[in-house]
Image (tube, rainbow over all chains, first blue to last red; front, top):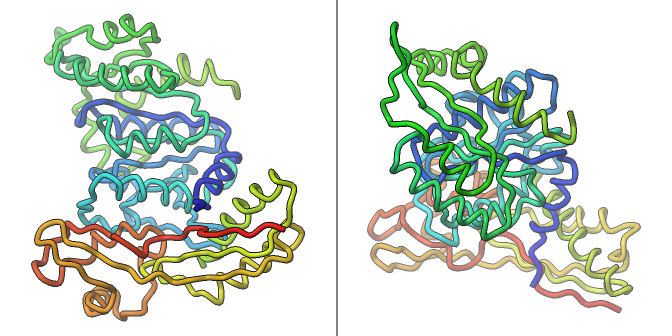
Length: 259
Length: 138
């Protein structure tokens, strides 16, 4: 028995320069907005970028790419583009309906998504991994050939630290490179002081414990939600995006083979 | 349209196997799930066309459509495509329309429901996707 999709996936990834996975053991840490904004920032810097949403249950890049559709081609589905970034999500095909999938079916769905998406040539593919260490994450880590590594996102809270450490253990066990840790929602700026409402230092602690880079902190940006509603261009003007861009320029692209 | 991409995957996978063994391919049996709704003639044409200049150039392609079977995880009821044709027609306008399941069979849970209890929590137990079941080398 032979699965032609596996060869197809290998061939698709031959066209892709570097694959950067964005993950977190925990949901609700801002992983998807970081992955999406990262793709848009890198696209804005002149790279050919793709964004792949593998969060089957909480597929959320659709909000940014709403109204856009995939296009059929002889060689698979061509992802829609926004500000030059190609994006693919199962939500484009499920019409935003719920996907009550169980274990093996999730792996099959991810395998199909990887096999059917015709990215063409890309400099970077940013992959929004599902939260946790279950079937989807394991399938993605198994099938995506030689990723540059994982950007791991945490909140500054102890709880987030505990859950994110489980992902770090998994990545270490599978020998997957970790590019570094981003601490999101690190503080909230008040006129006279910074309020660290979720605590402090967890991102640095995880980085130290696992011997990986701490990439930086991103503050809570009250303007983010409205900007997301307004669209990608507004998103790129937020304080959130500026903080992420600094991290990308200094810590991610700076170490890339392509820059 | 997706048939060409599928054919490319099959030809690449089988070519790799044949090249590793230094042999030519005489016959390939491909099983396709009914749920995918592939057009067999298009798939066959694509396979033949893409096989020129590969170790599959002399191959005979045998394409078998496997009936799709579902099992409800809630009430245990088992059913096949005929029982959900009405649901497909209601959602997509025609029971023969190309559906998102053409690309990802697992999307069935987003569109279909158990005909007995109405649950969307079911498993595709047979007849999904494509697999190369047999390869005969010379």
